[in-house]
Image 1 (cartoon, helix red, strand yellow):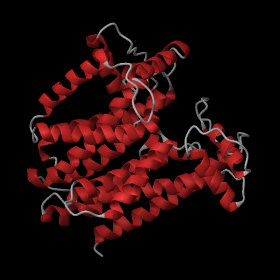
Image 2 (cartoon, rainbow, N blue to C red; image 1 turned 90 degrees about the vertical axis):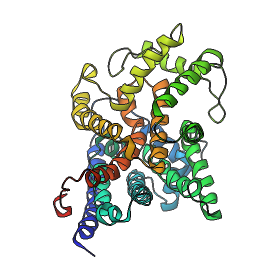
Image 3 (tube, helix red, strand yellow; image 1 turned 135 degrees about the vertical axis):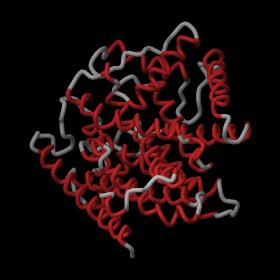
Image 4 (tube, rainbow, N blue to C red; image 1 turned 180 degrees about the vertical axis):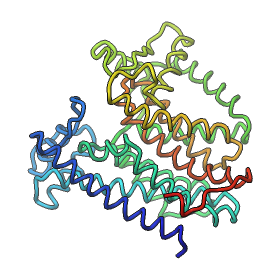
Length: 398
């Protein structure tokens, strides 16, 4: 084991210890607020943690429960397995989900390196793993969604990355493997049971990627985006009331849902972007604003509290840089990386249709940004190698 591998091993262990400590620390802080440790109220707003906790207890005790997703059943069975009603079990369960996310992210890094030169693999592979590890650990919204409450989100993040690992092993390899297919189908089903929209996003991303591949190879991104805009216009104009399978909702349903929050919760952390417009051009202009806001918000004019100011400096600024870095180096991307980024963009594109809330955006977009960080961790070193610049030695990364 060389020096950089030892650094990676040490950091992996440090992340496990730090995550467990953070989980215990926040649990006691939340318990001091008098809600059994379910949710730590930082800025006064509530979340779905109390609902999930109530339903999990019903599952554990064999009582009727409200099935908004499979998540209450999952955590209720965790309580039943240990015959306990201590909410820390659920917090520990979600922390394990974070560890699984790290493992899946490292696998996705490895799959990218299989499409670059051997000398780049040997030189930078461990560096990329270290970068992903550190970026996930210090991704503020990700850590908040894991530890602040007992939300389902971490399992959505993990399952999406894991399904990408399985999908790439199936779609980009000629050899048929029944094990991958069975696991992929089960994982997709489980992801859809947690949140139907995320399964729609995954399927749509695969379709869009292969439409792009069918139209051209790389180098035609601008023309392909133009075609997508035209197709979206046709869908918006003629098929707005078409009910999508799986979620059993139409585009109009999504727009009306978003609009209800504009009138009911005007101000606060709302972006104030109305997508119900008299024509497609106005819709598109407002939709692009929503897309950017959900992708890297809060933007400077959205800052109206300590919380949004913190997110602006901790996420918006670094995310804007990473996005710019990737866009400037699209020519370096491999087919697998285009596939990953397609999933990232489609998910945030669907989120931009129904969400106008900055706080909700920071909770939903980690799927997009985890994928972009994973790609960035490889492209960063590939760019350094091909540009001939000196790369910081591995031992100085930490």
